[in-house]
Structures are given as C-alpha cells and as structure tokens.
Length: 190
Image (tube, rainbow, N blue to C red; front, side, top):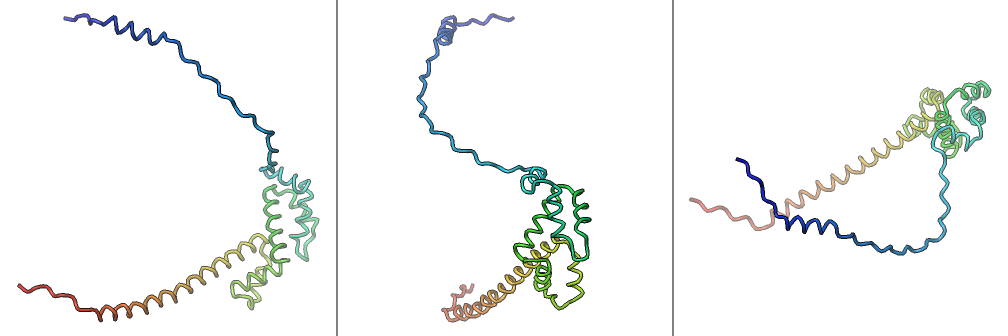
C-alpha cells in the first residue's frame, strides 16, 4: 500500500526565501587608462603568389632573373625563362633560394662543384666532377650539406675512439690498485 510522503512545509518556506533574496551587486572596478597602442608589426604574405609579387614584382621578372642564373653556357636564357613562366610560384621561390645560397656562400657554380668534390674526397675524379656539373643547383647544395654532415659525424666517431682507449688503459690501473688492497675476508668454513 502506498502512502503519501509527508513533507516539511517549514523547510520549503525557508528554501523559497533564500531563492527570493536579491543578488548582491558587484561594484565596478576602475580600469587604468592605457597608453596608445604600439604600431602592429607588418607580417609578409604567406602564400607563394603574394611572396613573388612582394619580392619581385611579377612572375615574369622572377623567371627572367632566374633564367640568367640557372642557364649554362650553351643554353639560351629566353627559352629557359619561357619554361620557368609555366612553373609554379613555390617552385620559382625554391629555385631563387637555391640560387641565392650558391651565390652568397660559394660565388658561382664551379666553386660549389669543387667544394662538393673536395668534401667527398673525389676532387681528382674528372668523370665525377663532370657528372656533378649536370646536376641542378638545389641538388648540389643538398649534396654539399650531406657531405659536410657525414664528415662531421665521421670526425666525432673517430674522436670518440681515443677516449674509449683512454678508459680501457685506466681499467688495468684500477685493477692493480684493487689488488694492492687488503684481501677480502673468506667466509667461515662449516
């Protein structure tokens, strides 16, 4: 048999009084006056087309300037410029970066090729040097960076070997010093 629950009317009355109490008003805090805002930093464009237009004016101007740098002695710069006009803006920017790296660090392409051959210990191999001259500037820059990294790794590895020998020569000295110490006590016999 179900019975009705008895509720305390006095507790309901108390809770309703609490709900009807007005909320306290928050006082507004005073904000300090700020000075004039600094000038915003101008950020360059991110997408390739805007970077090309910002740095070189037009895509054709960039292609023409790249054609002069990329062209070898036997190639026509106008034909190369026409081919470069059909390339994407990001490709042109990457070519410009490789050409600038070659010009700033090595002067010209022949010095870059000589640096690669020297780094790989193949400077006397005429066929290898001739083959290097057929590679693109970007590929040559990557090859030189790889050769430098490889040589640095070999130098660290060969430099680490004498240190290991020094440790192994210290090991017999430590063993001799241990032998000079008093012998350890033997366990008691049963």
